[in-house]
Each structure stands twice: as structure tokens, then as C-alpha cells.
Length: 375
Image (cartoon, rainbow, N blue to C red; front, side, top):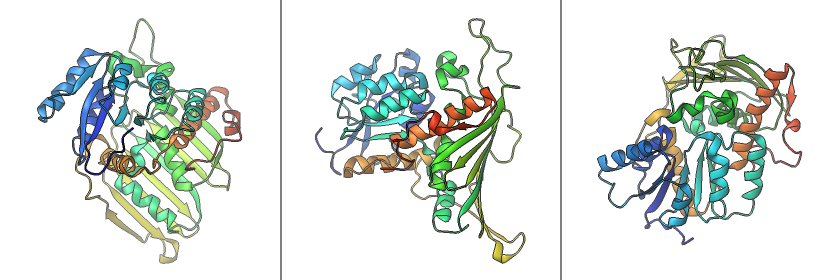
């Protein structure tokens, strides 16, 4: 591939132009020096949606549209490809992309199964072009502030991490593919890989054991697809234990629209506690030495965010870093190893709740796999 200099426009191809594909297009439109040159999606309505967005922004002329992602890969009109197709297609699409010299951003989850993730991880070992995994929650400004505070020693040694997501049910997707575990990897992979990635990032350690309890109690039980009832979980608790002794908890409820906060994060150590809240963007920090209930709170925003989108500007910040890495030749901030671990924890959680026992990560991953965050 010809190097992409700061003066050369970055040409993006989008594979999968449903809801997340459109979200990526809108973010790319706000990245300096970036342009969308191709879209691939087998669904005509999704291609039309992408065309309407690009034409509406006045940048639709010359964009090429394909039914098959392989035609986009072979067309030679892109430098970077965003994979935003349904979860169960990621492995197949990546198998076609990895032999190319295209840079890749693949949406979460990396794949729906650990074996597929391991295959992709191995296949990309000697690849020069980058592969970036779209775990953008780490870019949410108050979350990034929390990570920085923990890394700077604000709480001392982090001992307990809690993440709560109380939100609305899964949205409808084209063909309702996201109603079944066989397509998504299961809720604790599809949705919660974001949170397991945050746990790994914040604690900067190797997860070793997972315990989970969850069910499908409320959502989608009255829906039928070819006579089949959806089987996706709508609530769960997941505990992840780490090598150096820290513990992390996920509290997920997907019938909790009646909540002040959609996401709440807290990290506690011997020196104090830090918290982040969304959508309020509030960051709260307290030190034990200051006394009971004494905290400092502030609203965290990032002035670099030019497009808020679905995720509080995090996707835009992710795209800025992706473009900078492509131009500089740097390693991805969020690599395949991070995508692999986030899926493995989710898969271990599903196994734990199905079998009613703790599950160790070495049941799913070979011992030679590097720790999260390894570059």
C-alpha cells in the first residue's frame, strides 16, 4: 500500500451500512482529511441509507456501492475499511480482508466465538496494516478521565471496580439478527465486551476467573421469528477476578429505561474512590484522607469532539486516533488482543451462568495468549 501522508485524503470503505455503519459514516464526515469512497452491504435499503447520508452531506458523488464486501476489497478505492456488518459475519469478512494491505477497524465484538477470535488473531500476526477493534467506550470523556485518575494513583491500588449499565432493550436491526445468541455471541459478548474491555484497561491486569448469573426475564418474550422466540439475556451480574487480586463487577439490566444514569463506573482502592456517570458526563473523585463524604465533582467534555453521535463523542475520538495511527504507522490503541479478551470474558460468563459454576479463562484461551493491552 502507498503510504498515506498528512496531505493525502484517507479513503474509507464501509462494510455494513446499517445503524452502526451509518454512525461510522457520520463520524468519518467530521474527521479532517477523511472521505468515504465505497460502501458494501447486501441489503439494498442499507445501501440506500448510506447514499442518502452521503448525498445529504454533499459528498456522495463518486462513492461506489457494492452488494458483496469482496468486491469492495478488490476495487482498490480505499485505504481503511470499517467492518460494521452483523456480528456473525465478522470472521468471514476479516478472513477476506486480512490478506489485503487495507487498514481495518472492526466493530465490536471482534467475532462471536473465541475460536474465531483466535483464528483472526493468529492470521493477523505478520500483517503490516493495522487492525483496530471498535471498543470505543474507553474514549468516552468521563471514562477516559477515570482511567487517567486510576493510572495516576488517585485511588492507590485498585481493588474493586463496578460497572452498571441500566438501559433500554436491544434495538431492531435489519432482519432482526440481533435477537438470537447464535448471531450475536450472546448479550454478554455482544453488548458487554465493551465493559470487559474497560475492566481490563482500568485494572491493567490479566483476568483469571469469571462468575455470572443472568436470565431473559422481560424483553422480547412476546416476539416470534419463524416461530422462534428470541433467546438473548436481558439482565445479569458478572464478577471477574484478576491475577493480582482485584475484582470487577458488571451489573446489567436492559429493561431499565427509568434510570437517571445509563452507565455508572466506580473504582476503589486504599486511598479513595473515583466514579464516572453517563449521560451526565460527571466525574467524581474522593480521598479517604479528606473525610467521610468529601468528594470533588466535575463535568468532563473533550473539545476535540466534533460529532457526539450515539456514544457521547467516543466514536469520533476513536476515529481521530485511528486516522493518526494510519498516517504515522503507529500500533492500534485498541488491538486484536483487546478484542479477543473482551469476547473471552463474555463467553466465560455465558458458560458460567449456563453451567452454574465459576469458569477460568484458561478453559477458553491457550496459556501463550498475551495479556490484555499487549502491543
